[in-house]
Image (tube, rainbow, N blue to C red; front, side):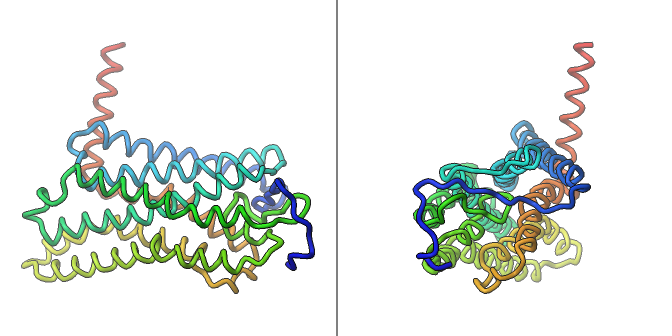
Length: 321
Protein backbone atom coordinates (compact mmCIF):
# COMPACT_ATOMS: atom_id res chain seq x y z
CA UNK A 1 0.00 0.00 0.00
CA UNK A 2 1.22 3.51 -0.81
CA UNK A 3 2.17 5.40 2.38
CA UNK A 4 0.22 8.36 1.14
CA UNK A 5 -2.91 6.33 0.76
CA UNK A 6 -3.75 6.40 4.43
CA UNK A 7 -3.21 8.74 7.34
CA UNK A 8 -1.19 7.74 10.34
CA UNK A 9 -3.05 7.03 13.51
CA UNK A 10 -1.19 7.48 16.78
CA UNK A 11 -2.56 4.53 18.70
CA UNK A 12 -4.80 2.44 16.44
CA UNK A 13 -6.58 -0.63 17.68
CA UNK A 14 -5.91 -3.82 15.75
CA UNK A 15 -8.86 -5.92 14.65
CA UNK A 16 -8.04 -9.62 14.35
CA UNK A 17 -10.02 -11.38 11.65
CA UNK A 18 -9.48 -14.70 13.44
CA UNK A 19 -9.85 -18.26 12.21
CA UNK A 20 -12.35 -18.82 9.46
CA UNK A 21 -14.95 -21.54 9.86
CA UNK A 22 -18.55 -22.02 8.69
CA UNK A 23 -21.00 -20.87 11.39
CA UNK A 24 -22.17 -24.44 12.03
CA UNK A 25 -18.60 -25.58 12.73
CA UNK A 26 -17.48 -22.69 14.94
CA UNK A 27 -18.57 -24.32 18.24
CA UNK A 28 -16.69 -27.48 17.23
CA UNK A 29 -13.56 -25.45 16.36
CA UNK A 30 -13.77 -23.55 19.66
CA UNK A 31 -14.10 -26.81 21.60
CA UNK A 32 -11.18 -28.39 19.74
CA UNK A 33 -8.93 -25.40 20.42
CA UNK A 34 -9.91 -25.37 24.10
CA UNK A 35 -9.17 -29.09 24.38
CA UNK A 36 -5.79 -28.57 22.68
CA UNK A 37 -4.93 -25.73 25.04
CA UNK A 38 -5.83 -27.73 28.14
CA UNK A 39 -3.93 -30.76 26.84
CA UNK A 40 -0.86 -28.61 26.17
CA UNK A 41 -0.84 -26.95 29.58
CA UNK A 42 -1.63 -30.14 31.49
CA UNK A 43 0.73 -32.34 29.46
CA UNK A 44 3.69 -30.00 29.65
CA UNK A 45 2.89 -29.11 33.25
CA UNK A 46 2.82 -32.78 34.21
CA UNK A 47 6.18 -33.32 32.52
CA UNK A 48 7.73 -30.39 34.39
CA UNK A 49 6.25 -31.68 37.64
CA UNK A 50 7.61 -35.20 37.14
CA UNK A 51 11.09 -33.87 36.40
CA UNK A 52 11.01 -31.58 39.42
CA UNK A 53 9.76 -34.24 41.84
CA UNK A 54 11.64 -37.36 40.72
CA UNK A 55 15.37 -37.35 41.45
CA UNK A 56 15.98 -39.94 38.74
CA UNK A 57 14.91 -37.38 36.15
CA UNK A 58 16.98 -34.51 37.51
CA UNK A 59 19.68 -34.98 34.89
CA UNK A 60 20.79 -32.57 32.14
CA UNK A 61 18.65 -34.09 29.40
CA UNK A 62 15.49 -33.88 31.48
CA UNK A 63 16.31 -30.49 32.97
CA UNK A 64 16.59 -29.07 29.45
CA UNK A 65 13.38 -30.89 28.55
CA UNK A 66 11.60 -29.17 31.45
CA UNK A 67 12.58 -25.79 29.96
CA UNK A 68 11.19 -26.88 26.59
CA UNK A 69 7.92 -27.90 28.25
CA UNK A 70 7.71 -24.53 30.01
CA UNK A 71 8.33 -22.76 26.71
CA UNK A 72 5.55 -24.67 24.97
CA UNK A 73 3.06 -23.97 27.76
CA UNK A 74 4.02 -20.27 27.80
CA UNK A 75 3.87 -19.95 24.02
CA UNK A 76 0.40 -21.41 23.67
CA UNK A 77 -0.80 -19.31 26.63
CA UNK A 78 0.15 -16.07 24.86
CA UNK A 79 -2.20 -16.76 21.96
CA UNK A 80 -4.91 -19.39 22.44
CA UNK A 81 -6.79 -17.98 25.49
CA UNK A 82 -7.17 -14.66 23.70
CA UNK A 83 -8.25 -16.36 20.47
CA UNK A 84 -10.82 -18.42 22.37
CA UNK A 85 -12.18 -15.31 24.11
CA UNK A 86 -12.47 -13.48 20.80
CA UNK A 87 -14.29 -16.41 19.20
CA UNK A 88 -16.75 -16.60 22.09
CA UNK A 89 -17.39 -12.85 22.25
CA UNK A 90 -17.22 -12.33 18.47
CA UNK A 91 -15.15 -9.25 19.22
CA UNK A 92 -11.50 -9.28 18.28
CA UNK A 93 -9.88 -5.96 18.99
CA UNK A 94 -6.45 -5.40 20.51
CA UNK A 95 -4.78 -2.17 21.52
CA UNK A 96 -1.42 -1.37 19.98
CA UNK A 97 0.31 -2.10 23.30
CA UNK A 98 -1.34 -5.52 23.73
CA UNK A 99 -0.69 -6.45 20.11
CA UNK A 100 2.94 -5.40 20.47
CA UNK A 101 3.35 -7.39 23.68
CA UNK A 102 1.90 -10.50 22.05
CA UNK A 103 4.09 -10.04 18.98
CA UNK A 104 7.22 -9.65 21.11
CA UNK A 105 6.45 -12.60 23.37
CA UNK A 106 5.73 -14.84 20.39
CA UNK A 107 9.00 -13.92 18.70
CA UNK A 108 10.97 -14.28 21.93
CA UNK A 109 9.59 -17.66 22.93
CA UNK A 110 10.07 -19.02 19.42
CA UNK A 111 13.69 -17.83 19.42
CA UNK A 112 14.23 -19.33 22.87
CA UNK A 113 12.95 -22.68 21.64
CA UNK A 114 15.37 -22.73 18.69
CA UNK A 115 18.31 -21.99 20.98
CA UNK A 116 17.14 -24.50 23.56
CA UNK A 117 16.86 -27.23 20.92
CA UNK A 118 20.49 -26.49 20.01
CA UNK A 119 21.48 -26.87 23.68
CA UNK A 120 19.65 -30.20 23.79
CA UNK A 121 21.51 -31.31 20.64
CA UNK A 122 24.80 -30.51 22.38
CA UNK A 123 23.72 -32.61 25.35
CA UNK A 124 22.86 -35.59 23.11
CA UNK A 125 26.11 -35.19 21.17
CA UNK A 126 28.23 -35.30 24.30
CA UNK A 127 26.23 -38.24 25.69
CA UNK A 128 26.90 -40.32 22.56
CA UNK A 129 30.35 -39.09 21.55
CA UNK A 130 31.89 -38.61 25.01
CA UNK A 131 30.03 -41.11 27.23
CA UNK A 132 32.89 -41.56 29.72
CA UNK A 133 33.29 -37.83 30.27
CA UNK A 134 29.63 -36.90 29.93
CA UNK A 135 28.89 -36.44 33.62
CA UNK A 136 31.98 -34.26 34.03
CA UNK A 137 31.27 -32.15 30.95
CA UNK A 138 27.50 -31.67 31.39
CA UNK A 139 26.94 -30.70 35.00
CA UNK A 140 23.65 -29.32 36.37
CA UNK A 141 25.28 -25.88 36.68
CA UNK A 142 26.37 -25.86 33.04
CA UNK A 143 22.96 -27.14 32.03
CA UNK A 144 21.31 -24.24 33.88
CA UNK A 145 23.73 -21.82 32.20
CA UNK A 146 22.81 -23.16 28.75
CA UNK A 147 19.10 -22.85 29.45
CA UNK A 148 19.56 -19.36 30.90
CA UNK A 149 21.53 -18.28 27.83
CA UNK A 150 18.76 -19.58 25.55
CA UNK A 151 16.10 -17.59 27.43
CA UNK A 152 18.23 -14.42 27.59
CA UNK A 153 19.32 -14.44 23.95
CA UNK A 154 15.84 -15.32 22.72
CA UNK A 155 14.27 -12.31 24.43
CA UNK A 156 17.15 -9.96 23.58
CA UNK A 157 17.34 -10.82 19.88
CA UNK A 158 13.60 -10.31 19.43
CA UNK A 159 13.63 -6.67 20.55
CA UNK A 160 14.69 -5.15 17.16
CA UNK A 161 11.98 -6.90 15.14
CA UNK A 162 9.22 -6.03 17.60
CA UNK A 163 10.36 -2.43 18.00
CA UNK A 164 10.69 -1.90 14.24
CA UNK A 165 7.21 -3.29 13.62
CA UNK A 166 5.58 -1.08 16.25
CA UNK A 167 7.26 2.05 14.88
CA UNK A 168 5.55 1.61 11.50
CA UNK A 169 2.74 3.88 10.38
CA UNK A 170 -0.68 2.26 10.24
CA UNK A 171 -3.77 3.44 8.43
CA UNK A 172 -6.41 5.54 10.11
CA UNK A 173 -9.05 3.43 11.77
CA UNK A 174 -8.53 -0.11 12.94
CA UNK A 175 -5.90 -2.06 10.99
CA UNK A 176 -7.29 -5.50 10.17
CA UNK A 177 -4.82 -8.28 10.97
CA UNK A 178 -5.84 -11.33 8.96
CA UNK A 179 -4.88 -13.76 11.70
CA UNK A 180 -6.03 -14.99 15.10
CA UNK A 181 -3.09 -13.40 16.94
CA UNK A 182 -0.57 -10.62 16.34
CA UNK A 183 1.96 -12.53 14.30
CA UNK A 184 4.79 -10.39 12.92
CA UNK A 185 4.26 -11.00 9.16
CA UNK A 186 0.49 -10.50 9.52
CA UNK A 187 0.99 -7.19 11.36
CA UNK A 188 3.47 -5.99 8.73
CA UNK A 189 0.85 -6.53 6.03
CA UNK A 190 -1.41 -3.94 7.72
CA UNK A 191 1.16 -1.13 7.64
CA UNK A 192 0.70 1.95 5.45
CA UNK A 193 4.44 2.13 4.84
CA UNK A 194 7.22 0.30 3.06
CA UNK A 195 8.15 -2.79 5.10
CA UNK A 196 11.19 -3.84 3.06
CA UNK A 197 13.54 -2.94 5.92
CA UNK A 198 11.40 -4.96 8.34
CA UNK A 199 11.58 -8.06 6.17
CA UNK A 200 15.32 -7.65 5.84
CA UNK A 201 15.53 -7.45 9.61
CA UNK A 202 13.47 -10.65 9.93
CA UNK A 203 15.86 -12.52 7.65
CA UNK A 204 18.93 -10.90 9.25
CA UNK A 205 17.95 -11.86 12.79
CA UNK A 206 16.68 -15.21 11.56
CA UNK A 207 20.32 -16.22 11.06
CA UNK A 208 21.42 -16.04 14.74
CA UNK A 209 18.06 -17.12 16.16
CA UNK A 210 17.07 -19.90 13.75
CA UNK A 211 19.71 -20.82 11.18
CA UNK A 212 22.78 -20.85 13.45
CA UNK A 213 21.04 -23.15 15.98
CA UNK A 214 19.89 -25.36 13.09
CA UNK A 215 23.43 -25.55 11.71
CA UNK A 216 24.68 -26.45 15.18
CA UNK A 217 22.02 -29.16 15.52
CA UNK A 218 22.96 -30.65 12.14
CA UNK A 219 26.66 -30.59 13.05
CA UNK A 220 25.91 -32.28 16.37
CA UNK A 221 23.99 -35.07 14.68
CA UNK A 222 26.73 -35.49 12.08
CA UNK A 223 29.17 -36.15 14.93
CA UNK A 224 26.63 -38.51 16.52
CA UNK A 225 26.33 -40.51 13.30
CA UNK A 226 30.11 -40.79 13.05
CA UNK A 227 30.35 -41.98 16.67
CA UNK A 228 27.46 -44.43 16.26
CA UNK A 229 29.08 -45.89 13.15
CA UNK A 230 32.10 -46.87 15.24
CA UNK A 231 30.07 -48.85 17.78
CA UNK A 232 30.71 -52.61 17.64
CA UNK A 233 27.18 -54.04 17.51
CA UNK A 234 23.89 -53.21 15.84
CA UNK A 235 22.15 -53.29 19.22
CA UNK A 236 24.46 -50.66 20.71
CA UNK A 237 24.04 -48.49 17.61
CA UNK A 238 20.26 -48.74 17.82
CA UNK A 239 20.30 -47.90 21.54
CA UNK A 240 22.46 -44.82 20.95
CA UNK A 241 20.23 -43.57 18.13
CA UNK A 242 17.05 -44.19 20.13
CA UNK A 243 18.18 -41.65 22.74
CA UNK A 244 18.15 -38.99 20.00
CA UNK A 245 14.95 -39.91 18.14
CA UNK A 246 12.61 -37.82 20.29
CA UNK A 247 14.78 -34.73 19.96
CA UNK A 248 15.02 -35.19 16.19
CA UNK A 249 11.24 -35.44 15.90
CA UNK A 250 10.74 -32.22 17.88
CA UNK A 251 13.39 -30.42 15.80
CA UNK A 252 11.64 -31.51 12.61
CA UNK A 253 8.27 -30.26 13.82
CA UNK A 254 9.70 -26.95 15.02
CA UNK A 255 11.77 -26.03 11.97
CA UNK A 256 9.23 -27.36 9.48
CA UNK A 257 6.60 -24.92 10.72
CA UNK A 258 8.78 -21.97 11.74
CA UNK A 259 10.52 -21.85 8.38
CA UNK A 260 7.10 -21.68 6.72
CA UNK A 261 6.12 -18.79 9.02
CA UNK A 262 9.23 -16.61 9.14
CA UNK A 263 11.80 -17.79 6.59
CA UNK A 264 9.57 -18.09 3.55
CA UNK A 265 10.26 -15.75 0.58
CA UNK A 266 8.43 -12.46 0.77
CA UNK A 267 6.66 -13.28 -2.49
CA UNK A 268 4.81 -16.04 -0.69
CA UNK A 269 2.82 -13.37 1.18
CA UNK A 270 0.59 -13.44 -1.89
CA UNK A 271 -0.59 -16.89 -0.81
CA UNK A 272 -4.02 -17.06 0.83
CA UNK A 273 -3.96 -15.97 4.46
CA UNK A 274 -5.87 -19.14 5.29
CA UNK A 275 -2.74 -21.18 4.48
CA UNK A 276 -0.62 -19.05 6.78
CA UNK A 277 -3.17 -19.49 9.56
CA UNK A 278 -3.13 -23.25 9.04
CA UNK A 279 0.65 -23.31 9.51
CA UNK A 280 0.29 -21.16 12.63
CA UNK A 281 -2.37 -23.49 14.06
CA UNK A 282 -0.07 -26.46 13.53
CA UNK A 283 2.84 -24.64 15.18
CA UNK A 284 0.89 -23.15 18.08
CA UNK A 285 -1.63 -25.92 18.73
CA UNK A 286 -0.46 -29.25 17.37
CA UNK A 287 3.28 -29.08 18.09
CA UNK A 288 3.01 -28.13 21.81
CA UNK A 289 0.53 -30.99 22.31
CA UNK A 290 2.81 -33.50 20.57
CA UNK A 291 6.10 -32.53 22.22
CA UNK A 292 5.40 -34.03 25.69
CA UNK A 293 3.92 -37.12 24.03
CA UNK A 294 6.97 -37.57 21.82
CA UNK A 295 9.29 -37.42 24.82
CA UNK A 296 7.09 -39.56 27.05
CA UNK A 297 5.63 -42.40 25.01
CA UNK A 298 8.90 -44.28 24.37
CA UNK A 299 10.79 -43.10 27.46
CA UNK A 300 10.94 -45.79 30.14
CA UNK A 301 12.33 -43.41 32.77
CA UNK A 302 9.41 -41.02 32.33
CA UNK A 303 7.01 -43.98 32.50
CA UNK A 304 8.64 -45.17 35.73
CA UNK A 305 8.49 -41.68 37.23
CA UNK A 306 4.81 -41.38 36.31
CA UNK A 307 3.99 -44.76 37.86
CA UNK A 308 5.91 -43.81 40.99
CA UNK A 309 4.06 -40.49 41.26
CA UNK A 310 0.69 -42.20 40.81
CA UNK A 311 1.57 -44.80 43.46
CA UNK A 312 2.51 -42.05 45.90
CA UNK A 313 -0.74 -40.21 45.16
CA UNK A 314 -2.79 -43.35 45.74
CA UNK A 315 -0.90 -44.00 48.96
CA UNK A 316 -1.68 -40.52 50.25
CA UNK A 317 -5.35 -40.88 49.36
CA UNK A 318 -5.49 -44.24 51.12
CA UNK A 319 -3.85 -42.74 54.21
CA UNK A 320 -6.31 -39.86 54.24
CA UNK A 321 -9.24 -42.20 53.63
